[in-house]
Image 1 (cartoon, rainbow, N blue to C red):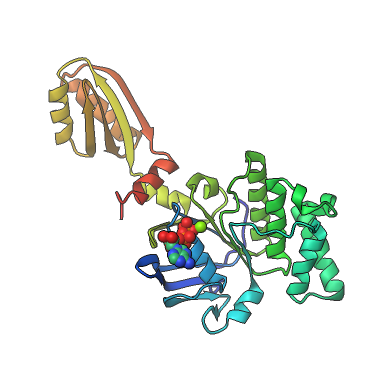
Image 2 (cartoon, rainbow, N blue to C red):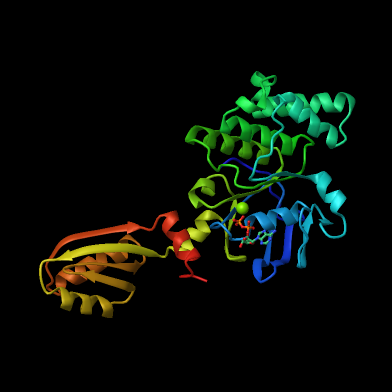
Amino acid sequence: MVDRFVHESNSPMIEMLRVHRFFGKTRAVNDISFEVYRGQVFGFIGPNGAGKTTSMRILSTLELPSYGDAVVDGFSVINDPDLVRRRLGFMPDGFSMYPNMNCVEYLDFFARAYGLIGKDRIAALRRTLSFTGLDKIASKPITGLSKGMRQRLCLGRAMIHSPAVLILDEPANGLDPRARIELRQMIQQLAVDGTTILVSSHILTELAEMCDQVGIVERGRLLATGSVADIQRTMQGALRVQLTAMDREEQLQEWLSQRQGVSHIQRSGNTMSFELQGGNLEQADLLKGIVNADFSIMEFAAHRETLEDVFMKITTGAVQ
Ligand SMILES: Nc1ncnc2c1ncn2[C@@H]1O[C@H](COP(=O)(O)OP(=O)(O)O)[C@@H](O)[C@H]1O
Ligand SMILES: [Mg+2]
C-alpha cells in the first residue's frame, strides 16, 4: 500500500462519538463510534439498511444525531455545521443531475456555490477536471455520460473546494471493473495528498484493497473495526476442512468432535466439513492423527475463509 503521512499523534479528522439516530422505532444508527486520521481511508461496510448512509449524512450535516456527536477536523456537526461543511465534500449514493448542463458548467455551478471566485475558481475547475480525467470531455452534455464518467463528475463536485475530508457513499456501486479500479486509484491518490476519506460499500472485497481501516456495520451497530488484515485474523482464526471417509464415518465424526481445535462439524453421508483452529501445522497434525487412529480417508481439503466468508459470519451475527 502507498505510503501515507499518517501521524497517530494527530487529532483525528473524523470522529463519530457515540452517534445514535432513530427514525421512530428504527435504530438506524445505534451507538457508533470511530475515528479516522488525516490521509487515511476508512471503509464503512455493511449490508443494505445497516445505517451507512445515515451515518454519512450526519457527518455531512444533512441529518442531526438523536444522541452523540460527530466531529470533523475538530468541529461538531451540532455546534458548527457551517465550519464542518467547508471542510467536507459529500458524494451521495443517488444521483441528481442537471440534464441541460455539460461537465464544466456543472462543476462551475458547485464551485460558485462554495463561494470560489476569480482565479481560485478557474484553478479549482482546472484541478478538478484534470484530476477526474474529465478535461477531455469537459463540454460534453451530462446526459450522454457513462456511469463511470458520471461517478467522476460526482467526485469532482465533492472535491471542487479542496475539502480536507471526503465522504463517499457507495461510489463503486454499478461500476464496471475498469471504472472501479480507476475510482480506487483516484481515492488512493486523494489520500496520498492528505485527504481523509470515508467510503462505504455493501461489498467488503470492493473496498478491502483501498482502505487502511474498515468498520463493519449491521443494523446500526459497528460490529468490528480494524485493518482488513486484523479483522481477517480475528474473525477467521479457522480453516474450513472438508474430508471424505472410506467408511466408519460416524466413528470419525465422534473422534473429530473430541479433538481440540475442531468445531462446527457438519456431516452428509461419508463427507464432513468442519472448522479447524490454526494453520498448516495443525492441519498436518490433524491428518496424521486421523491416519494414526486408523481411519481411511479418500479426500482431505482445507481452505482459508475468504473475506466474504468473514463478512457473512460477522453480519449474520455469528460473531458479535
Ligand atoms: N429518513 C428516514 N426515515 C425513516 N427511516 C429511515 C430514514 N433514513 C433511513 N431510514 C432507515 O434507517 C435504516 C438505515 O438506513 P441507511 O442509513 O440508508 O442504511 P444503508 O445506507 O446502510 O443501506 C434503514 O432501516 C432505513 O429504512
Ligand atoms: Mg446507503
